[in-house]
Length: 104
Image 1 (cartoon, one colour):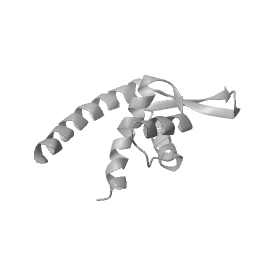
Image 2 (tube, rainbow, N blue to C red):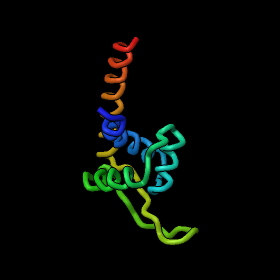
Image 3 (cartoon, rainbow, N blue to C red):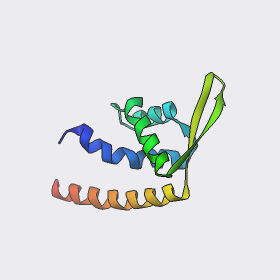
Image 4 (cartoon, one colour):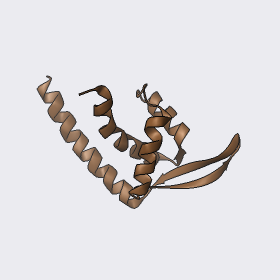
């Protein structure tokens, strides 16, 4: 399994976590993920995730004017998204603990 395949399942939870902290738009989200250590993350990876999360009603997007050019779509987490994030966090801790135990 490639690093990219492993990462795809984790990125949805990480995107929800970032959006749960503050309203954000795609490019800003990519930059925050890169700062957190996801160096290979690009917009082409994140924008489909945002569309998927919005379609599942885990986040909402609204267009707002930008001070630096065209309008941007800003995202906020929904109540359903917060619930999904809580489940992700629980599952991640459980899986992470098991993997760390095996590699000890």
